[in-house]
Amino acid sequence: MFKLDPNPTFTVEVPITEPGGTQRPLKVTFRHRTRSAYMAWRKQPQEDLDFALDMVESIPEVPEGMTLKDFVAALIENYPAASLDLFFVYERELLESRAKN
View (cartoon, one colour):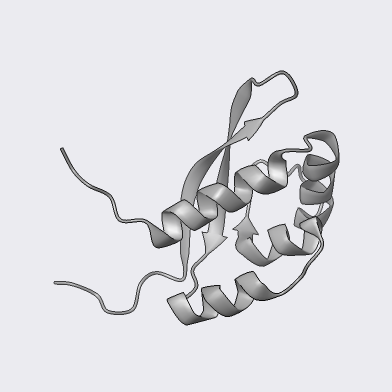
C-alpha cells in the first residue's frame, strides 16, 4: 500500500570528493522535507555548515565523543567540495524520481 506520508529520514551514500578528484563514500542520513518546505529552505541564505546541518540527520561514521556539528565542520574544512557533494545528493534523492530499466 502506498504511504502518503514518507519516512522522516532517508539514508544514502554520498561520494565525497577529495582534492584531485578521488571520491570516497560516506553514509549519510538526511532529513525529509516536503516540496514547499524544501523550496522555502533553499531560498534562505546560510553558511555552508548551517546549510549542511539542516540537511543531515546523522552520519554513522562520526567518532565517539565527537558531535555531528564538529564532524561536519571538519568534513567541510578538509574537503572543500563536501558541502556541494552533500547538497547535490540530497537534492537528487529528495526531488528526482528513479526510472527503472
